[in-house]
Image (tube, rainbow, N blue to C red; front, side):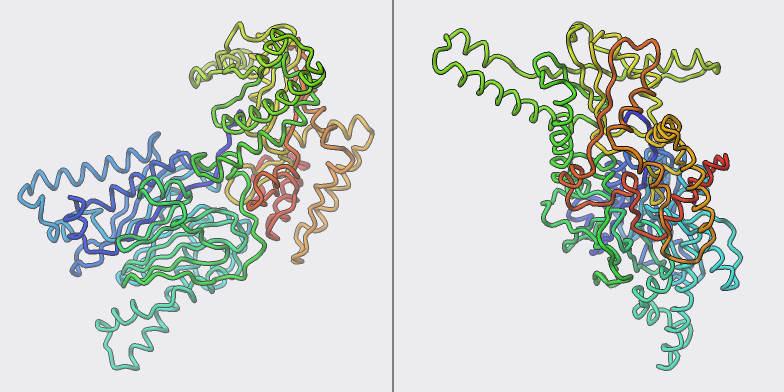
Length: 632
């Protein structure tokens, strides 16, 4: 995506179902779980580069032995850093105890990170900062193993302030306002409640406090804890948790906004945010990997029993379509086809823009992540040109010469690699003119393939802010001297903020919003802005759940084409010689391309939770009042 977006995090979990000696014998190492965690996290590094963390739990160690290990990093390469720390610790111990290199029982008792249960996290910072304290997994430790809690997730809550107030009403004193801490404390509170209730049951059987612990661990009702904890959560989430004694869970929001997949065999239970990651790391068939349903939790008890339990009432599935457009790895079989279809389905609009002149058009893509949708556009262009060839040959009524037929058949669409990202140039000079000049050289272009009579069509994943297009890409493409530059977005116009994990919180940043404001001014309808603000303010503190997204009224007077046209006007600076046109994917075609992933609130304003509608109105209030802050 030409405009850099920070986005949702990634989770990884491995539960070993056999004793560590089993993996040593079969795979030659007791570090099987750690090795798999490294691969699961590294394969998901696209989901988080601000921080990474790993936690492990040992089941079979004596009291007084550390059974939880955790390492986190916010270094520039956090995954490499945390596993470097793990590797150094383990190597140091082996250097001091070389005779223990094959002693699995000793390793389990004495070495950190060798355990039975692992939770990993890769993070992009959204709520809160990027300090080490904000890196998952979070730990809530207790002297009772069944009350020690580790939490990591891919989520944002829209109602964090309400959740904090609930904790205060429970008599707690939250130390932070970050939604991760808030969620962990909610789970921790009801975990303590459940432990207390289960302990009373243990006492009735005559068990003392020491002997009650195994009873509590066996009978602890994770489903009930999650039901009570999440009652008032509003957001998109895939929440993972470990209890110190060995229970684990992964819980997905009722609308299935954030992704979570799992695989189980006789050796392991594995969870990840992306399906192909599990396929690759464990070399398993796609059909063996399951998706955790919205509103359900995968619960793994210490004894290895695994189940899927309903937690909250399911809502219509609104899994994030941005996952399919951009964020997830394109090696997933379904995502690959969906991205190709995004390129294919937007092509009719492209064809109109170039007046059906495929022969005098060069097609390409920026950035590399748009390559798959480019393949789909290629196929669509080839289909159209083949139809044109067929019509030309048939129009000859069999009288065309061999040379003419060969000439017709030799015509093909012109697909080229036009822009190549050279390096991430650091804008170390602070004045605007110097910075803009540096930004304008981020990409190198291929000269000699575009003629002055050509159209140049470039497909991008999406156009969010338009900043990079205006300051860099269009200027670079104009050097090739095409007669027209057509910028194609495989996603629809981004009009509304996201509040479920993608860092798009400020509505004033979106070029579609800015374009609509300009159109309102030009058509003498800017009073709509004041009206929308008044309506948003009137329901700002309402407790009513039926909150209306009044920001839709900003866009209502105009067609998609009018807004796209204004965006093109705003992107074309005075020095650009070529005509510039911007084309966005229609929402209807997005749904055709990704039929099982209909979460489209950033395009349509139709949020799957009440909190989403509150956030969009607050985002508009912030814009109107000049408050440069997040809306949640």
